[in-house]
Length: 428
Ligand SMILES: *Cc1c(COP(=O)(O)O)cnc(C)c1O
Image (tube, rainbow, N blue to C red; front, side):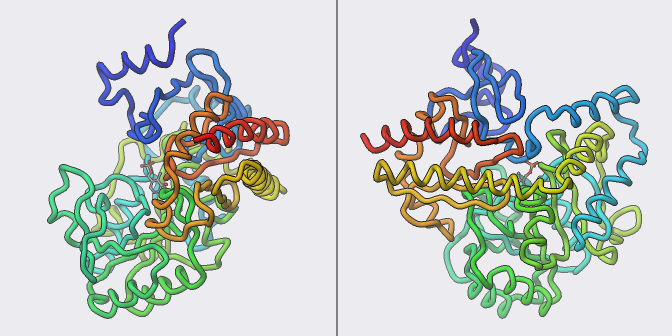
């Protein structure tokens, strides 16, 4: 039988690091990534035939559960009509209408193939619309891997960022200002100094890429007020939170209306789809209507659109989010109980179908606080859970995802595994 170790070794011969996206390589937790052969409902199976309860959910998209029969059927049906045309289809129109219906801040939307494309294009549009150069992002928020967003905080009050990746010239990020998440005073000061040069703020309205970190009261409200006052655009990057934190994303939960929204993950239902949208007046600046160029050979791909549409239809059914939210709350409550039983410094938080677990005694509100958690404890817990057949995100800095298929039986098995895993942490 082929083992995960065998295939991982082989993979590293022809694929850098053996993976096609770095976090999959288990670098931060150590050990061997599981090579997945199939998934169904709340479970995934690796190449050794071992079954796991899955809390990765493909990093978010698998919200209705893996291989949902209706989604699979929609995809199968669509494939019979051809895989891609490079010409418009009715499905794209229906998906655009559905997104606009679900997210009232969106009047018009353009489909792309990934979250990275969505954020990159939304920022170009914000710059084209305002005629300004500078953008604000927050430390710990991830917006894909385009050049101007691969940046970490520098030093000094007006923190122009430093590239966080080799291959990104400092000049390319010289218009990106990096500030602390949840620190509205810094944002205010920055606007007072260079507010009329700022094209946009891009923010994860609930952060899910430094583990789960929620906005403190007043943060998003403050961003909205400052953008309005200075004529900058507010971009909510809801690639992760859109249709995951709630049926209308974080904008639905908070009532705060961004100028532009970026989406991906759930809206593709497991196929590659991204989107950016907002007020028509802004969206009209994109080619072919306007001067901001943006294009894609496979944008609005009919198979992806079919998967996305069916997924959005399923999660629009009555009771979907109530059930998902209560399963996620039950998960973190159960985990906290087991941690307490073993006297582990542990906290957890959730919103909709996403959650964060932190090996520290209180829920973090900033990037620096997330980094104060006990990484050794997390890594021990992660591997113990994996041994017990529970697949968490392989990093202390990632959020977790629950699907509509995570029922009581799945949760109870998770708690049994966690009981043993926390015991190993306690023995460290
Ligand atoms: C995943 C993610 C992205 C990038 O999306 P890709 O499809 O991986 O390019 C951007 N923003 C946020 C908030 C994300 O979670």
